[in-house]
Amino acid sequence: MNSANVISIRKKGFGGQISAAVDSIIGTRREQQDFAGLIVEEEQVLGVVCDGMGGLEGGSVASSSAVQLLLDDYREIRPKAAFSDFLCREAVRMDQCVLAKTDREGNPLRAGCTLVAVMIAGGRMDWVSVGDSRIYVLREDAMVSVTRDHNYRRELEEALERGEINREFFDNEIQTKRSDALTNYLGMGGIRRMERSVQPLELMDGDMVLLCSDGLYKRLDEDQIKAMLIDNRVSAQVAVKRLNRMVMQKSLRSQDNTTVILIQYHRLQEEK
Image (cartoon, rainbow, N blue to C red; front, side):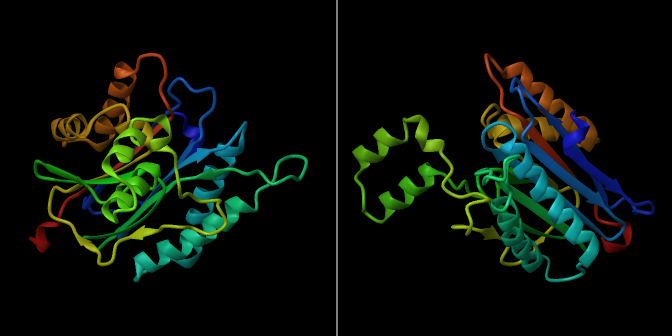
């Protein structure tokens, strides 16, 4: 793990309700452009992953600045309710923060980053997503993604549903590399799409919440990710490290930066 791109804070006295871990690898890239933050406190948890994009140091500046802003605001505001609203307001601030970044000559940095963030308190989870990083929830033996990718492929799917393009055009376009191209991210100067929890998700005993950059799911399919989580339920720290180890084992010539946060929820005895 490159600890320079991960902020992890734990407060003493947490009653065993949450176990959480974060792990990040650079892959075969020359620079780490993922950045992650994890704050585990007695009453609530905040997790965030941003995947940067941009030439030279642009992507790392975008993602680190966005994560740092969220963590700083969280510690200053100390939200205790309306977590989804807090996360959405923060996404707007993070977008403006990244947009305002400049290079050493004072020119616009023209970089961006994705965002996935969750807050868990009182057995409920709120979340926000911009871009193509993902949030998965594993409950017993079933895993679902609560986010949708903001890329050209999704634009094509929606255009096909509206009858604006035909099936032949759709099938040809999704075979191209540009189908993965992001159409929405922080740093655009106005977020086109922002997905959020409309209502908090009620967590059940044993639920696992996984935040990840696209380096994970573009190398491992969802069945492989699910199997690894199920096989390592006893330790969040072991699970995230084994996920990234498996990513590198499956890599051939190249592997993107890959960052994962795993949060395991355990209902307290008196709550059962």
